[in-house]
Structures are given as C-alpha cells and as structure tokens.
Image 1: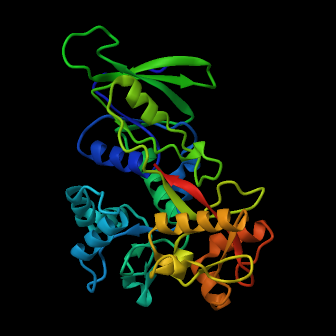
Image 2 (image 1 turned 135 degrees about the horizontal axis):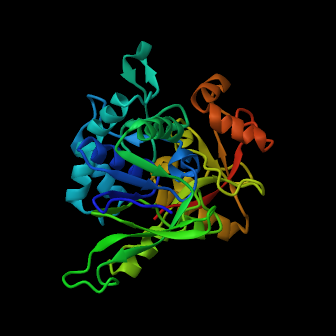
Length: 347
C-alpha cells in the first residue's frame, strides 16, 4: 500500500512537462511524487522528433518569433502567454543543456544547429538529430531518478482527484490528493498532497490517426473535480504521419519539410503551392487541411512526402532515426517518397 506525507507535491504525468516541473520544485525544497501511467520511455515526449523553437540565432528576434506564433494561431493566441513562452525559450534551452542534454551542434561544436519548421520565418528549432524527445527525456529521467526529493512511480493509473468537496470539508473546493490504481497489485490507494500538478498530455489517441496514445485522462479528471475545461476544439493535426498498416503512430518530423521535403499527389505533382505561398512550410493546420481536402477530392487515402531529391548523405546525417523506421517498413526515403496522412497531435 502506498503512503505519503500530505505535504508532498504530486505530479501526474511523466513526460517533459512533468519531469521538468518535478526537478524545478525539488530543487526549491519540495518533496515531489511523480506518477506515470506507463513506463517513462513510453510517454509521448519520448517520441518527439523535431525540436524546440527558441530565439538563439543573433539574426532572429523575440518579436519575430512572437509574430510568427500569433499568425500561426490565426490571431486567437493569448498574446501575453505567447510573449512569455517566446521570452523564456532560450533560458529553457540553457537549462536543458546545463542538465546534460546534448543538442546537435555545428561549426565544430561552437553553435547550436537550427532547423526550420512550418510557420517559422527563421531557422530557430533546436534539435538532437531527429530524436529530440529521446535526448531530452533520457537526461530528465536520469536526473529525476537520482534526485533524493523525488519519488517516481511508474505504471500507476491515477483514477481521480480527491477534492475537499468530496471529503465534505468547508470552504472553497480544492484538490487534496489523488486515487491511484496499482494494476500489478490490484489495489487503489489514496495519496494526499499539498498541491497536484496535471501534466497528462492531451487526447489525441482517441482519433483513428494519431501521433501518440494520450487519451485525455487528466482533462477528464480535472472536469470531474470541478475545473473549467476550455478550448477542446483546438486539436492540432500533424500533417505527416506514416501511412502503413503496421505504423499507426509513426510521426515523420516536420523537419523533413524544413529541409526541403515536398508533398506530392500519387501522380507526382505538388499541391501545397496552390493553398499557401509558404507551401510545405505553412503552419500545420493549413497543411493538414490541404492534405485532407486532396484526400477527399481525389478519393485517395494518403499523399506522399518526398525528400529523395536531396543528397542521400544529407538525409542519412540529418534523419537517421526516421530513415531507420522507414526501412523497417520497407521504405527507403533516400530513393522514394513516404506515404503520409495527417494525424491528431496536440490537444
């Protein structure tokens, strides 16, 4: 049976958000418990490929990054939130590097290598080859396991939040703890907390085509506890998920298009220039809608992403992991286009 002090901070979710929050809080003197539904290596963060957008290049600017983000968000973004995220981006990269994350570098290791992705007017995406999630998560997992103030519980499914209203206590309703299922032991335990952080990801996994298996557990728990849930209609679809009967959730990084990859119809013709002047580097929603429109109009079930016109050496160096995954499914991206479809990505 699990037990704990009610002074603990409980973090539900073992991805980048949950682990980085745990480290920050633990370093400030808090006792932290992190719970993950699966193994940490099974989180959506571990699967991330492309990278992290931050203003690192001296020729770039915070105002440019802010403007690109607001435009990509169709003007619906909270401008102050965008400003904070953009402003803190470079410091977050430094924090990760200080903890040991090794991003891809250039110029003999002196500069971070920056790539470009959809909606960005500059190269500003910091990455670790084409497996940024693995590079970041591996370091964070090691740091969390080593931290004396952090208790890590994997393969624990949090069933519900425990609220003061449920307990019949007077005053404003607040979260007092959680109920958690230990599937191996077949028991449900209650853990008390001074604060509970939900870092559970979205609900993309409910769609037929998805890049991750998140099923909205945290959102549902928050709603049941009395939280306001908003903006659920904003589901971001990634334009390029590998279309293959044995590859339901294999993402093909946007960086492939950032390095010159083209979207093609079965007859080999491009279609994105007719939808947006930025073509393949338009924001994800525009590219995904364009693909969906072509699928419906032409009664086809996928389009193609082609970077085979680029030197094979560049593809091998820049996308070693995607190259390997494609090869496992009988595809050689240095010589042929990759079949892709849009897939639910962020909620």
